[in-house]
Image (cartoon, rainbow, N blue to C red; front, side, top):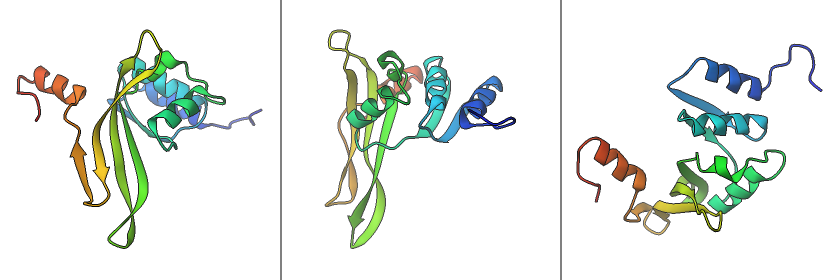
Length: 150
């Protein structure tokens, strides 16, 4: 159990949400606070956080498994997954965003997460490649009355 007066990350996330912030930024999540964070995202709250996983599939497995145990329906609240990793570039160890993937929802038949890569990193050239489509960029462009991104 908890000791008297002990405050954990779950308590802090709940308290922060009561303040109705424009954006809720939480460091690494890996326990009960993750569920609260996803509930906040499901209601439209802008949230930023980190989580350790090597791929979108690994992220889904970790979020759905104990001790977190998120239901698949809440995973659809996650709009973007940014995968970062340590790589060798020019003889130096550097951090790079390897993939930026949008989560577009859940397949109603197979219940799989619908994920679309938007940007991928090319190690040989140390550049990012746009994969040709971003539902979020298209939606933002439409809402602002500008053309879709190329």
